[in-house]
Length: 135
Image (cartoon, rainbow, N blue to C red; front, side):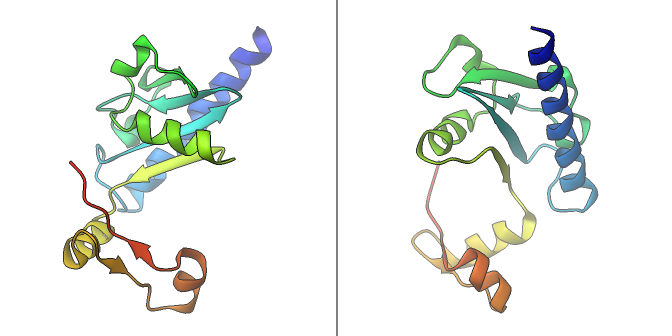
């Protein structure tokens, strides 16, 4: 039990570290994004409305990856997306951010459009990025 508590403590601190970095570097405004980490068959995910640059132990919630739970109601509204990514991939962490430049690019391309990086590194690592519509 003590080992799990230590791991859980370290995990929320990692979430907090990257949340602060996103805001400090101007990539997002404080409330525009969510972060999760896989922990076996569970994930730690930021709570709905959590400010990314002010994450504490109480700003994250642990939910099951395979099944929904009563805690989903306080978890990020994007929990369903994180859960599906973990189900279908071997990802260990997810940062879902609404970077202002990415938002502008998606608005210019429109639903069904594509964003193609103009630099070789962006093209190599990201490829052509589809823009999907959503509610």
